[in-house]
Image (cartoon, rainbow, N blue to C red; front, side, top):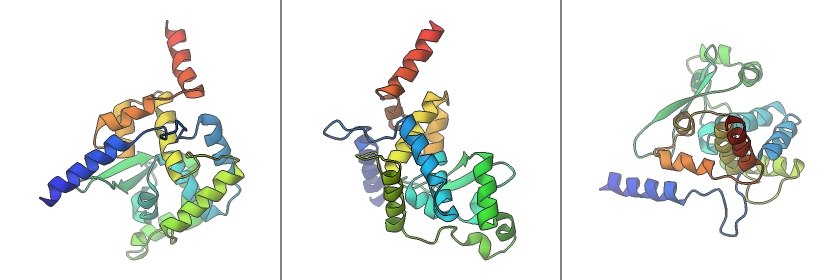
Amino acid sequence: MQNSVTARRDQRSDEAISLYSARGERKYLNRSERERVLAAAAQLDPEHSLFVLVLAWTGARVSEVLALTPRSFQLESGLVTFVTLKRRKHAVREVPIPPAVMDSLDRVFGLRRLQLDEQGALCRLWGFCRMTAWRVIKRLMAQAQIAGPQACPKGLRHSFGVCSLQSGVPITLVQRWMGHARLSTTSIYLDVSGPEEMSFAQRFWQAA
């Protein structure tokens, strides 16, 4: 009974996802806003900067990133393993991250060293809570001069979905990276406007 209730809750959660608010406001960062956020993140202290970079380059949820330990990272392969939240059954997923981000994580947190320590390998990298994470992101958005529904952690997650599809990543791979149970959930990231829609149009014009 509990599983069926959870499944229905997951389905409602998936169906409720939209890239726009009830007033038609955009919930995702466009490419220019994303670049400003990444530039502003470089000015933060290393711990907070890397938290933002992992969010931005994986499309993960705040709680998923906060749960990461040294053992979550495959340094040689450039992969980070997440326990996927909001799924009826236990699920994990592997997401590649840029080599420069992985190198910085290793340098700041000492991942290689901690992975050899039985206890240290299982300790969370970021010791702060969700509320602190939200405050970090909100301050960062203000510094990047971004306001509106997109100026939050979900704005980064939605931006990851839009930008990865624009860059030609297969939608089934984006689905796996983001931990979506249904392809229909991932397909909302094709529903873009403004500069993002123009990107698709330009690809069409070139092909035709």
